[in-house]
Image (cartoon, rainbow, N blue to C red; front, side, top):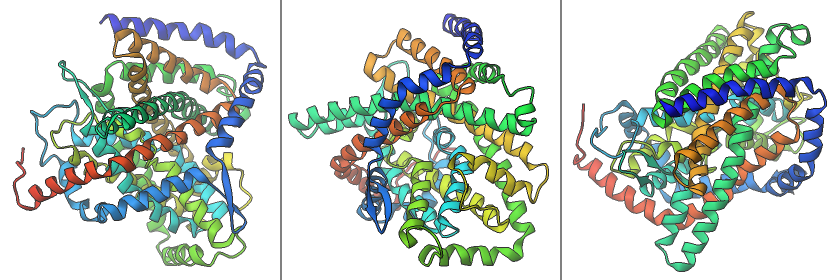
Length: 508
């Protein structure tokens, strides 16, 4: 009760702070100018690229895709052969109520999905199809299928090396398996593991404040303003008010920790996914005659793109980039949420995690792409920052009132992403500063403050910096995963043998 009152008091204090900020028109530019040098340096390093067939390919993208491909072959296409069993686990057939952990398989999956299914599926796909043509969808789907193996690897390790406390709570994720897992290989690896774990935690905290928070609040507020009259809207100059409302809504959930987050996301994620997917399917089924042509353009465009800069490489780059940047497979963030699952077999959550890139990329992103292709809304000259508007126009061309539905979806996507990333950032914060109420409270108040800041500012360099921090997480995470692959394989072989032999206990 004391903690809830303290957070509520801190929330009320945000209004006074942000009202003052809102009155200062030049603060956006001053912050942007201050951050720009650091943002350019960090983004330049993380997104450093090399030319292939005239196309600049970011090294981090290659790092993610190569790892996903290696993991897929190393585990003998676990992304396909464990798909059916993953559904059984999500359904609860093997949920052990006596195992350590805080949430069910379904709740862990919903929490992780809420952190990935979001604006990237709406805005990012529109940009990828516009810049890469319909063929980008083919490579996006392929990258999503490969990314399932990365999720399997990191989420299995997350449960394997998590900390379990006497009060029933747990803490897990890359920072723990990097430190504890590599330490098992000897003193030299122990030192490397500690360095990688600290780097990951720092990057994750930075990403949670930016891409997992301010960007979400900023883009959802922009969509609200667009559907309520644009610059003439009553809300146009009240980003701070919108942010305060969202901050209160986020605060009420994150006070309850992962259990509270899981309860909300297990309801919000299916609801928002059904709304968005249903609207997309209505348009696709209403234009059924155009579907074969759209599919043909996706397949042929993947290998023989006409007029696309960079040819096949350019199309492949756009598809892979959107998939990797949407489902975050290999980044390691989702392993933090999956680590809270109630299970005694780490591999079970790795198998459940297979569904995350599948739902995020293969299902939701593909439906968005099909709608854009069928309605002919893709625009090669699109501004990458106008992706939400392009998707909104595509749906509106078939459903006149859809921009309002999209606005609801955008706000819910952003809301669920923020509460999930608050948990990711919190676990990394307490990893660095210790598990205590003071550390917990400090991070949550900071996170809620940045929700309001993100809604009331033009973010500029802040977003570039936070994006770079999120994808910088992939470097220490995947490096550690390579060293720990044999651990995952032993866990998988033992579990899969029990599953095939019918030795796994079932629970109703």
